[in-house]
Amino acid sequence: INSKLPTVGTTIFTVMSKLAADHQAINLSQGFPDYETNEQLIAEISQAMKSGFNQYAPMAGLVSLRELISEKIENLYGTKYHPETEITITAGGTQAIFTAINTFITAGDEVIIFEPAYDCYAPTIKLLGGLVKPFELQAPDYKIDWEMVKKLFSANTKMIIINTPHNPTGSILRKQDIEALIKLTKDTDILILSDEVYEHIIFDGEQHQSVALYPELAERSLIVASFGKLLHATGWKVGYCLAPEKLMSEFRKIHQFNVFSVNTPMQAGIANYLKSSNVYQEIPVFFQKKRDYFQELLKQTKFELLPCKGSYFQCVSFANISEEKDTDFAKRLVSTVGVAAIPVSAFYTQKIDNKVIRFCFAKEDSTLEKAVEKLTKL
Ligand code: GLN
Image (cartoon, rainbow, N blue to C red):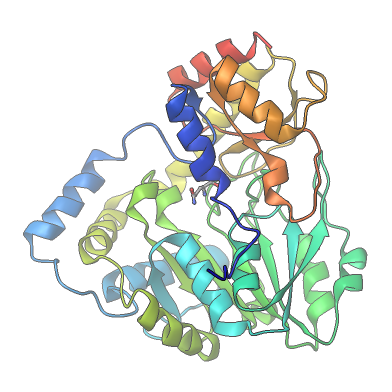
């Protein structure tokens, strides 16, 4: 068989979660909560099924949910996305990213990504014959030098993918980053794909810099968001994409033949729940507490903490503990210490090993305590 992705194996999340299960280790690798989502939300979902929301949703998603998204974005970021034409509900963030890249990238197009980068970007670009142009960021702060980014531009640059708050590093883009991006791409046709799935998980009073705050950038951008992260329900696979109509109409041409539409009762239940919940206020407070607690616990270990300003991931350097490759260290950690983490080299297309691993702290306090107790033995 002629593989279309000869160098791609199974995603690191699947690999590490399986290793965690095999070794009965505490799984801080793949990012998902180990506690239940809100009871009221679950009741809304089952009520939606009982009320007959069991057939195909409209191709772009239930209008009630799209209207709520439109209101939220306008309230928070000041840009109006029209529910009819500029918002599409997707089967999670990953499908939105896959469809967005599929919609605009063809053979020979170049896409700039910032590595470490979420693991689905590069293979999706390659699948279409696109060329990945990685800009490498380094520990500890993973800051972007935008003047250097400019050197990657060519006549074939079609898209730049940004991600804030950033998975895996927990770094965030600030106003000056977005302003630099605007300056660099002014008077070009370069599209921006902005992965904002952790938009509500941001700490220390920082403001999420959504592309939707910047109309001149938003007009060339697709924004991806996720209810899985917002609602502690990653398994429901409901997310959405926002884009101006001229981009969204093309996105939907692909979306309709990819999934057609996303499961209806989840959309109906989520819409009803959002009408009466304070989830947008609660979520940053909830995760700030988790992050602070996990960081406090980790001080008992030999790990060096990297800054975490957003997302539910804490990166740590193990350079003080071992000279192993990060992949070897992560394997040893899961098999002998009993804690699973993600080696950050998995998020680079080049061989780059900063001796950093990523822990997910969307876990019960007791899970974090048990994990750290094991980690102190290192
Ligand atoms: N987004 C999750 C993470 O970064 C994983 C999602 C997946 O397993 N594909 O851990």
